[in-house]
Length: 197
Image (cartoon, rainbow, N blue to C red; front, side, top):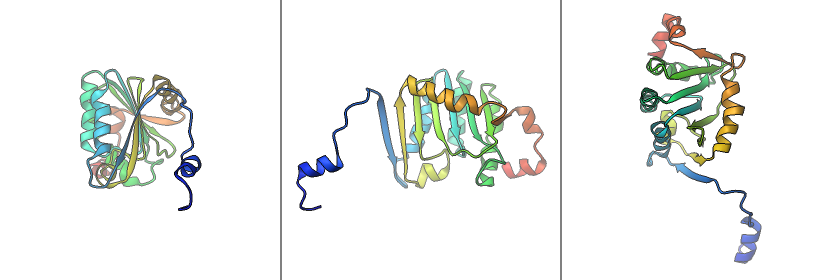
């Protein structure tokens, strides 16, 4: 409304909101072919973790991210990954593409992988039961290179605990997911192994 004063616009569209707390949040906006905020944040979460890392993503396609998880596991970080099963994925080729990274991750002995029975499109990472990453993007080429994605890193042990109890702990139960092991990978059919490669 061009007739509205600055005060009226501030009152109508930007009302004063009382502070609800003092949590530190870093907000990022990724732009296509931009500075790779998604890539930088995902790698920073993996590289900065000291003791634990919980990852919940539908797609883990980027070798740089799976390599960062392997490096974290090799320095002693305990990692749980929750992702989609073949039956739970929305786009089956994505399941094969993610699965090609399983072997190197499981070989560390510090990474557990759980494939959920039903589709999930959450994008969450919790590092050291404190730092929470939430986003509209995944660890895939689209989000890393050409998507308009939003992400936030939140410093909140309280939120981290809540996400652990409401998302990760239930998602790793047998009734909700299948745990992938090195032994179960050897039972994949030749066709699955060919497609994953």
